[in-house]
Image (cartoon, rainbow, N blue to C red; front, side, top):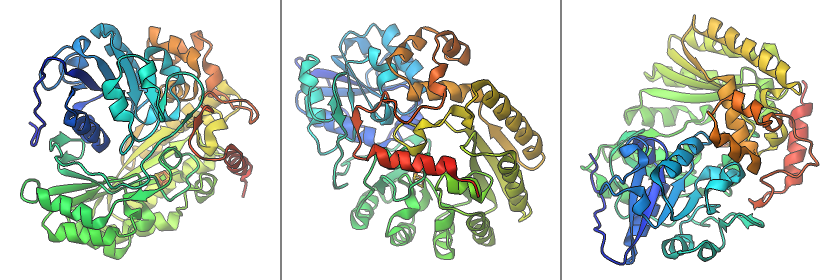
Amino acid sequence: MEENPFVKKWRKGMRRIALVYPNAYASGIANIGLQYIYAYLNSLENCICERFYLDVHNCLRSFESGTPLKDFDLALFSLQFEEDYFNAVRILRESGFKGLKVAGGPCAMINPKPISKFFDAFVVGEVENSKVLDVIANAKTVEDLECEGIWVKEGRVKRIYPKKLDFYLNRQIIANSVFGRCLILEVGRGCVRRCRFCVVRQIYSPPRWRDVRILIETAEDYRGFVDKACLVAPSTLDHPRIKDLLSELVGMGFTVSPSSTRADRLDEEIVEILVEGGLRSVTIAPEAGSDRIRDVLNKGLSEEDIINAVKICSERGIRSFKFYFMIGLPNERFEDVKGIVELVKKVRSMKVDVSVSINPLSPKPHTPLQWCPYTGFDDFKEGFRVLKERKRFLIRELSKLCEVNIESVERFAVQTVLSRGDTDVCRLFDFKPNLRAVEKLGLTKYLKRIPLEVELPWDFIDHGYKKDRLAEEFIRACEFRS
Ligand code: SF4
């Protein structure tokens, strides 16, 4: 059940806009950017916006009134994950929707080409404080959508973003989200770090933080209404006044939960505030099993930082840890993979519970690793063989120590094709989403190393970085040996 829902009734002459989240309700409602879009569109006199979720009427009828998708004038899809493309295409096909189709979200900002055939336009950027939502609300034709920050499938596009995070939701919908039933406080966007595999630092640059005073005022409005506050940002604990913010929230009686934690930010003071605020388990992303590979990734985190963070937390009563790693990294040797097991052994010896989640690296557009071969090997078949062997080794060794989940090598290969592909990937949506279909359609070329001089499918998006700088970082990562 939702608290604080927005209630608006359709009147004749109003434009109907469908806000479609082709994934589960719990993750959709946790997205504060989508809540902003929903509230803004409904604040306009001439339109009504209703939401669609995969687990509510199969995304074919609206959450609010059960109105079929095909009765809406415009569908605005939020593409958060490449694998959601298959849901999005299925929804468009099954619903019989004939109106304008626009997509936004991180995937549209990264590379919309693989799904471009199914949409009229893509929003490239963050829409707050821009005129994009007004343009969308009034658009009757594709030509009406032409505006800064919207790619109408030709030419170049420059990402838009608000320079300051000075906009706030008047009414946040509180519901059972992936963070639980809580007030969601977006503390910042972008990231001050420079991890080479991470697309967040590129597509949400520059890093911007929200004013602590206004965040506290927002929390004050919800005090007594919810007792938990979730602090959301790509690297929450890097907020320059995070300790003040956490202390104030805890003092107000909130339990607090940061959406991400960096091991090197977990000092005694911060952990004590978090424990007082109800934190019982901590998630850490060492990413790799050795300092050498963390240096390749420019993660800026050492094994000493990780062990130290676990020590500080466990001494203050936190007994449960979740660790995230990747495999198939550039320059990765078997000893680096064995390092994952060694690190988990060290942490387990500190008498704490650990669960481990491991993904193959999917090299992302706009990052210095965008030219890397999937699996890290130039020989495609050899790379798959080695990665699967490493996966088997990790399952065998880690399952003796802790709970372990390792994602499928094939599944992440498909994800990489959806992320790095060109318009020819649109054909994939006529098939089951698996590696067999990728091979059959000759799309394995998107899993291979990309020569530096080749024009990339996503080069038409201007995110404000210099490609030469990315190339220098890529070369540095590949040449890293010590
Ligand atoms: S991985 Fe995390 S810390 Fe590194 S750049 Fe991305 S958001 Fe920042």
